[in-house]
Length: 439
Image 1: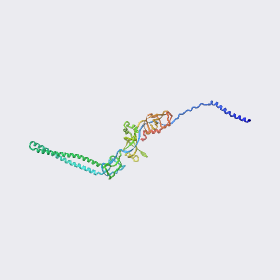
Image 2 (image 1 turned 120 degrees about the vertical axis):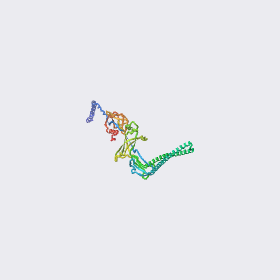
Image 3 (image 1 turned 45 degrees about the vertical axis):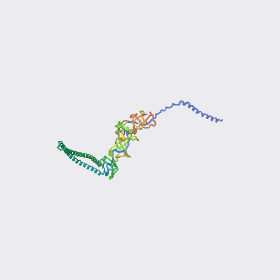
Image 4 (image 1 turned 180 degrees about the vertical axis):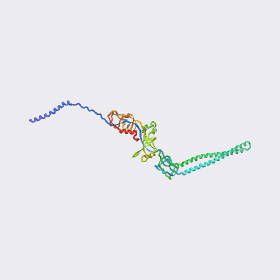
């Protein structure tokens, strides 16, 4: 090995020493400079939610049903007498309105006038007959009195022996004949009286038939269907035309029985029966078109006598008084038959009720934001629910805050960052009190 080779070998060995010294120094010094681990503070997570303050409101229960309009009264003009139609009014056309007492159709009445004249002639004959019979009765009565006096006189003479017994018997037979004649005349008068009553009844019937040839509207109507015209023959019992009354329009709307319960509870007659309670409800009829909605004030007239077996709903009949007078061209149309309308029933306000949105109820529980902004999951008791709200019987007090937004994972006691949900509260107040519908 040369000298140069030895030098290179020693240089390589010396390069190993520094790393070894550095490692030993690190081992020795590291325990001396080691720091204690820092304590990391855990910050509790806050969940943002929407919340609202629970109000105490005067709840106006309401429900909506649908039905079709029909008149409260209809008129089917059936021919009560037979005959040819000799006159028809210009108003007797579909859609025309006719005032009460207006004549709209006339049937040929010559036969009925003739029948009435014949009966009147028979009555006049009966008057003459009675007059002559009364005169004959007066004469016969006087004659009978003479015969009775003659019989009594001859009977006295026979007792004295002045006349024979056969003479007395002859006077007695004459007296009996006189009595028989008087009685016959009285019987004729009695029979004539009975016949007169029959003639009077026949006259009344003939007068009624004559009156029936003139068809007049019994009340204000709108003509809906005409089946006969001038020069046509009307058979007795034939439907000539039909008309709808204009005084009152009715709508029978169907409502589930359960929906009516809170309304009845809020009505004036809340302790009465369903029918009486329903009569205290307020009603409004609406016709919705593509451009606007028309409303009529109505009243609950009656409740249907049966329940629909398929839908288990009850019919409530509401009435609109004088709908024709309320019509305004271009604004409020007349309520014609078969118009499909909406019927809203509302109760009297039920004061001091705790109300929450129906969406905030979760399996009978609500999420409460307590005073420390922590979640309190509380069970509540519901009085009734309707539409988008629920009336709470027990479990929440007015002024408490409830969570209105959804929580992915709700843990009792979790920290919340509530933000006031004014929109939900505004919708709740509007729906429960009906303020907008009253504008």
